[in-house]
Image (cartoon, rainbow, N blue to C red; front, side, top):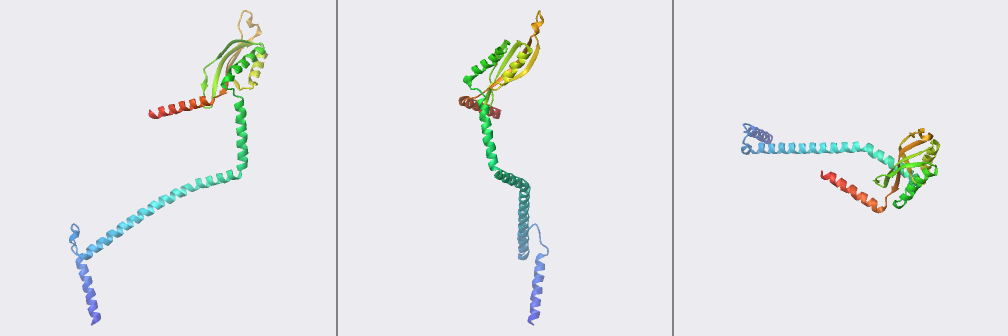
Length: 231
């Protein structure tokens, strides 16, 4: 009798549950019986949890892929740093050599006060070879980041070998002087110029900037950058 009562109760329970799910109005869930409400709540919660889990997994996948993409670059960076660590002593020696080379180059650049003496040396190099200066005109100083450039327009006349020796003397000056836009031709005249040649060229010499000039140059560059950004 107990078993029969239990079966009857279970059947009655399932029958009641089925009845509660029949004829539900989806537009009025608030009027649903208890079981459909609980089922709808659980289903909604499961969907929310599932969507959240999928979203979390998607974000984790993207982050994982980003880290995987970074792996080759990190490995290369690690290898470079290991190589630098192994060659640290050699790199330090190279840096010292570069610094010494820069110092030697700076010594070849005259200061602002030495420019007049350098111009005189160029002039004397020509006169010492018996050349006649028809033009020796320093131009406008061009200021670069760490040095200043002075162009000098020159025209000299003389024998071929004397002009060649003059250019060699200029190249061998203790200060850096370069020749550009060189033009050589015959001197015209009644006697054909007496076999003389002329050389026109633009000599360029360089000097280092003193601290005040470097600061002024940096300030000017900052103003230019600031003006460019405003535009």
